[in-house]
View 1 (cartoon, rainbow, N blue to C red):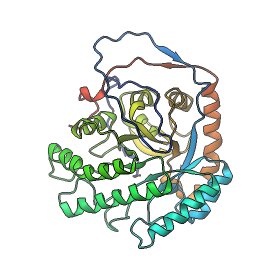
View 2 (cartoon, helix red, strand yellow; view 1 turned 120 degrees about the vertical axis):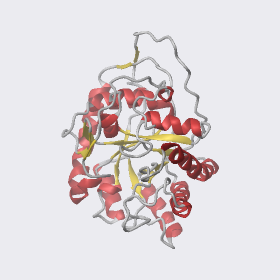
View 3 (cartoon, one colour; view 1 turned 45 degrees about the vertical axis):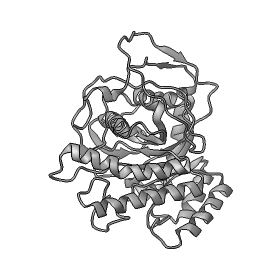
View 4 (cartoon, rainbow, N blue to C red; view 1 turned 90 degrees about the horizontal axis):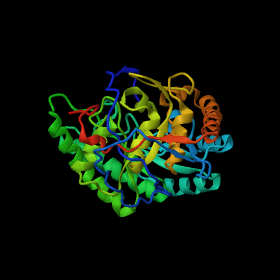
Length: 357
């Protein structure tokens, strides 16, 4: 969602949260288990047979099809064989601030049903709230009225997602404002997300927070810090961007999937290089995709895995057509062999490595 950005290298090792079966289904989350503390870990790995698991469901993000009308974008994805769509709420597609948004949402739900497309609602539109500030205002802004505008957007997103039968609602923390100390920023984030989580809990819908390079909440360890700060609420889940894992996590992308599995509610996928936050088409970065998809299947992830190429929107139909066969080939490769599953290493929030202070 940003221009290519160099990111400092992270440590090469860090504790992991345990992976495990879970089911997002249509977004109705169940209570999430607390990661156990593990003090004695062996080097023995288990081998998980993924052959009998439910196939992965692939989608494409509308932020990568911004030059198409929404109905045209959905028809394209259905024609190409995608299972779903990552719907970014924005002025060019479904404007969450439009006075007729409820009626438009009802029509969209019918269209998605007709096309057989599942949906996750994403909230990363660049200028939907402020025409001058990218992703502003955020949940971390010093002005409480500005924070309230972002909270209102996220609550609107929960309502829209509920009406669409979405798997989850995605969000992120935002960048820490200048002259704001980290403790203040973390408490602002927790306080701002509380009413959004209340709305998600009432709706029975997961709120899937995305670690985003350069943001306050940038890593898996940061997600666990937020989770503990909020008291481990059942409807707080995780959006895992596979490229971000390659960019800055101490674990490999496949190991990030295993570590994140108990909380995983939404997945974004693209290629990326180590230390550079630039979303790349498949094959142009460094990610081992068969191992990533095998890890998703091994952990029985059942949400959408959505291609995230917002800066390639100028050629969106081309990249949508290229991406799905690539993912199907990688999934077929993954399905041909068992997946070695690393043993659990406890909660990554227990150590500061890779985490924003």
